[in-house]
Image (cartoon, rainbow, N blue to C red; front, top):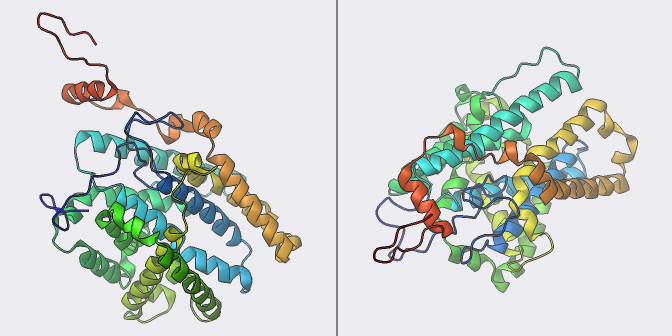
Length: 397
């Protein structure tokens, strides 16, 4: 969020607690807090961000379900509205909780165990699922071409590594916008590590780095909530108008302009326009996220599980032809599908699922890293295992 020596402005706002999940949504852990274990005293989780992550992961699951039954009608209109902001909201939160990231051993270890390892495990699992579940023996297992939704972990890895760069440059947001615009007119980038999406969504992450707690409080004002209602209505009308006129690929940010059949100059124009709409609707979304603890607040700590797992059901429905059932073309069928998707991803964020799969989603992996004696001592001190030695007294740990 800041330069390496001085923040944006003259007064530094304290960074969020170390226990807050850094990636935001599909957010691997960044602190010692594990699953549903309570945070240490004085380091409580912020209910607002857990609420935002849970609501966003529900929209992700619902959007993926709607994506299988698009019909150029009301479903696609709602789909376009949701796809305009649900991932940008996740990415903004991810950037916000990445403000303290540097290339220290502690942060690099968490990046590997919380992003790289889950990506490798689930990319392999989804590739095997497609090979055998979809009877596709020719499907290769590769870590360079992310499956479906796993592009986010690839992008998060790259964004995190470049965080010191964005904290150093004088005008990070304009620079990131320029990078996104240039990516949109460069079809040669290819699909390796979802680099097109990584670059086109980059401004959302950089924006998160620049935000402070007061910015989130600002969008929670009553006046902003009231103004958000006509904005959402206008966005819905615009989405309805765009269905027969604008390709969905512009919202996915995974293609250059030429690959969408547009002239090269349309790439920067559409990227800036869609990112502007994303920012507006993301602000509307944050305006209505509750700040107090809700029944679903605790589920916000497990959104990475819902994110990684729910696509197995989406893929299974696609492989078996379940989404082609005629009832899903009817309004009641779509409503039922929506409720089902929301319920499933909610279950996948619960504590039992997290306990069962923590070994692959949030592995400790102490065996894989060198132990820094100084860091170990600081960790013990934070946990309260070290006490001050009285004169002549031996220290016991």
